[in-house]
Each structure stands twice: as C-alpha cells, then as structure tokens.
Length: 177
Image (cartoon, rainbow, N blue to C red; front, side):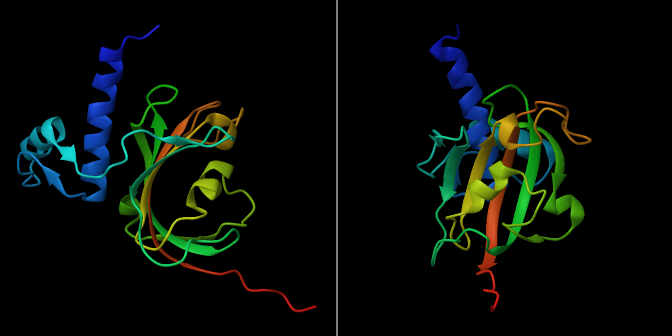
C-alpha cells in the first residue's frame, strides 16, 4: 500500500514534465535550454494548466487535458496530424517513462487516419474528441496499447504514456455507393 507522500512525489515531476513538453504557462526557474536549466525548471515548475488528475474512461484509458484547443472536436475516423512523444510507463499508472518514439525524433508531425488498422486503441480513443491545438497526456494501459505480445521496442504488457498535440484534423471522406 502506498502512502499519500509517495504519490505526491510521483505526481509533481510528471506535471512538470507535461508543462515542459507542452510549453504551458509556468512559473519557476528559467529554462535556458541547458541541462542545468532543464533540471532546475523540472524540479520547480508549477503548471498553470488545471488538469493534474487524469479522467479515467471505462476502457481504462486515463486522459489529462493539458490544453483544450479550439474549434470542433475531432470525430471518429478523422485524418489527424499530431505532434507526440511516446513513452513506456515507468510503472502501471505512471505519467512518465522511457521515450521510445516522438515526432521530434522523426523531425516531422505524424498524419494518419483514426480508422487505420494497426493503430493502438488507446491512441485512437485518446485523440477522438480533441480540438485543433489541444494537448493531452494519455495514460494507456497495456490492453489498449500493444497488448500481450508488445512490439519492438515495447515489451509485452507494457503501459504507455503519450503526450499528444493535435495539430489539425480532417473529417473522413464518405464513400459514394
């Protein structure tokens, strides 16, 4: 059983990581981009985003709304363009982890259909309903990720954490009969 203090120690760094990753309005030491600046900022940043606890969906997906975005919500099956950071969770329910992929590494945003086969269910569910410019942290349980088998470099039954920014979306084309 965990005490409240250990949970507080886990939450504070993850909120700081979200704030740094998404450029939220923050207070605290200036991060000048140097290693020392990032470490100082990560230790004391307080996000002005109001989302600190995830909203848990019936599927087990946790969603932290960092920034709501603007415009109409993204519908199921839409074609989306996202910036993202994908991590293998440090432990079940963790809000941070070891990065295994990102749009920054690829040096480009990623565009795909939410109806695409092979898309992990947690990412599909977590992006649907977002608005352009919106930012979320998705806490994806292994059953909504790569499942029992995993996929290199993700091990079997690994929980995932995705930091996602929806750049834009377009409704899926309706096929004529």
